[in-house]
Length: 128
Image (cartoon, rainbow, N blue to C red):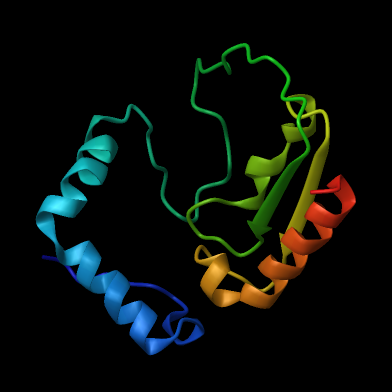
C-alpha cells in the first residue's frame, strides 16, 4: 500500500488521524471507493494545471434546489479548488456559502470551530 500524504497532518488530533488511516488501510472498506475512482470518466489534471472544464463537457440540466443550503468550503483544498463554487448560486436558490480560509481538504478536522459556527449560524437563520 502506498503512503497517504496530507499537507496538514498536525491539524487533526493524533487519535482521529490514526483511526482514519487505519480505516483507509482496510482493503475491503476502501474497495468500493477505489472502484468508483477507477470507473469515473473524470480526467484529473496535474495540480499546477489551470482550472478548465473538460473539452466537450456540458453540465446536465438540473432542477433548481429550493431548500436552504449551507456549503462550507475550504479555500486551500488541493483536491477541490474554490473555482468549483462558481455558478452554484444558479442551481441553489437559497444558498449560504461559508468560505474557510487557511484550510485544506479536511475542513471538519482543520477548522472545527469555524464549521460548527457556520452550522449554528445557518440553523439559527433558517429556524431549525
